[in-house]
Image (cartoon, rainbow, N blue to C red; front, top):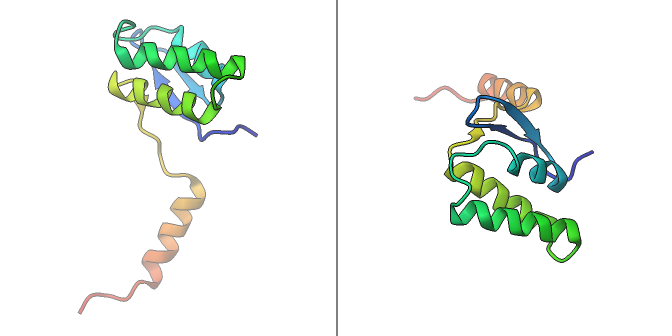
Length: 99
């Protein structure tokens, strides 16, 4: 089981990748991004490398990766899980009607 919730990245060239670990984040950072010179991208690269080397907490590196991907518009919106959809349907059935 992965440590982080899955992020789907859609690269500039149209390819996609699901990222759930710091190692996968490193692979994704090597993909085609809009701006590999952006400060947030460079910080994500540094923190992911540091996490792999054991000198940075993985959660911090993954958060930096997610931030960089979001700022470059590469995060594909996530759909609610099947379980959450079922709970929403149950809730709507038992919710009292307004009035």
